[in-house]
Length: 469
Image (cartoon, rainbow, N blue to C red):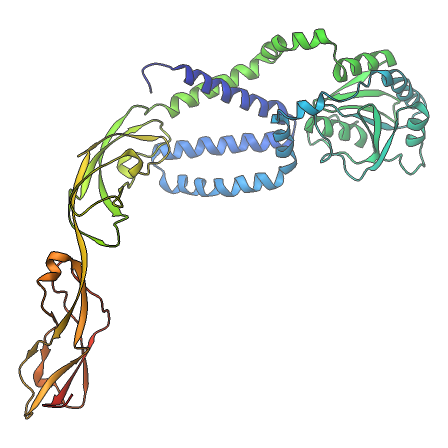
């Protein structure tokens, strides 16, 4: 853990607290919240098993974590899309151009209570800043003004559009007969029917304001943020719609302090959890360990050959920035040194931090030695004869010679070494076993270190009569 807390650390904690609280506020009344809590428990178990050295359990949990993330993305794609939309800052540019809907609330509220008086079920959805395109399905698109006659006609039992919800967007009826997602909250009272569960379900997944009329009880209720409250009079409904959909400027000015001091308990709990995790993550911050790193040389020019390079490995001091980083003793690092700029003769190449690929949460403090020395020579090719190495002579054979095919090969290597090479020898052949008319294969031996023979296949050896070519 660092000896002092930087301003960046405070910002780190506050940003993560804000993000986690947003996730909590969005998913607190949805089925996604239960999955997130379960995933959090699995994560704690994983860190505990890793700390205790339970390698098999931690490995299984790590592999399952990848599968769980994919499953969560597939199952909760609608919730994730909505959360990403809420993070979008550009949407406010478009939301600012929306029309006021206050002129319709008087007539709309009176019409809704008239439907309640006649025991006609209805669901009216008021879209606010968030898009509802992915939440309201199978609706019939409309584009008409909001007036009592149209609303009453839509919800009269027996009409083609009465089964479903009406969407009011930008002060106009945008769609009717829309299907809404049902709430999965187990605390919803049993006497609530499908309409109320649909209203709660949409309000849990978006910032929409949903008005629902009970066909059995003739009651009007308002669903916002996964909570349902009963509206006793049209005036109460109008006031609620004015406050939520067209808030006055004074409310907007006071929203910032209210945002900070509302729901203090969950905010404090999340801040505490984030602070604890920050302490755990930074518990090894500043720890320095020395490891050996081999040198991997690459980028050598095609016309050059490396004759000598020292040292072959360096001592690297690694600084841990997080407890999530692996232990330095368990990582395998190497220095990838680029030789593309070397010249003929002696060269000194400095080792840079960019030559190392380190895991996240670690940085290089120093390297010893700070430079390596390499010697390079020009590459040269030369054609030399092949010399057959034979032990013993063929029995009963006179006037025969041992021939090789090909008779010459090309060698490549440092110019000074290649200049002193006069031939390339084969591996030793037992001459007593050679038979005239048969072919034998023999491998070529490398003439010197760093000199290569540009032929991979063995040469062909055969017995031939003298004077025959």
